[in-house]
Length: 173
Image 1: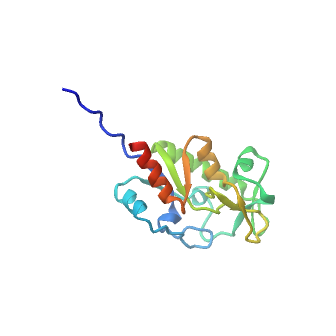
Image 2: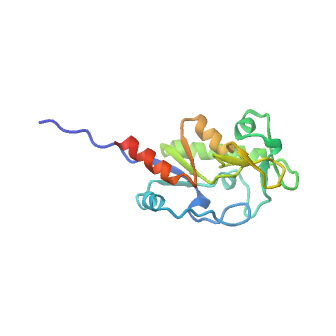
Image 3: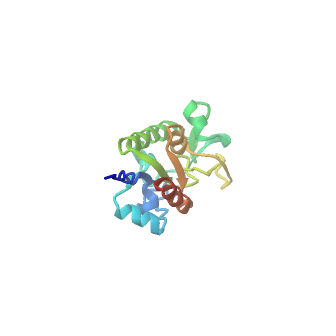
């Protein structure tokens, strides 16, 4: 008698705390994504929540911060760009520390995917702001998104939940 192998375990998903309703953004707000798949994953215990900026020691509220001079998360990680807040303070160290904490959490829970709040200098995955605090966006990734991707974790923006759901279904066959 032949037995089929069990289906692969449902993958864990690292998720930005603000995306699941926690008011931890720089201005004390949430960026809640109301989506059936996200609610389902939460019910199934598959979400691993994190706020890299809180994990790095920053508080709520905190001054807005951007990667300076149009830089990217990859450049911050390599030491060729920095993150500054609207007052000009260099806040690179807490952002990098928070990204490392998020990566360690993702690895500890064997997360294959992440849903992060787009636009953030930590969590942006399709766009970030250009470092001039003028609400100008450019394509790029924040520090946490870049670090997760560098370690093989697939990162999706909070607006790409349908794409992540499709990706997971594709992998599960």
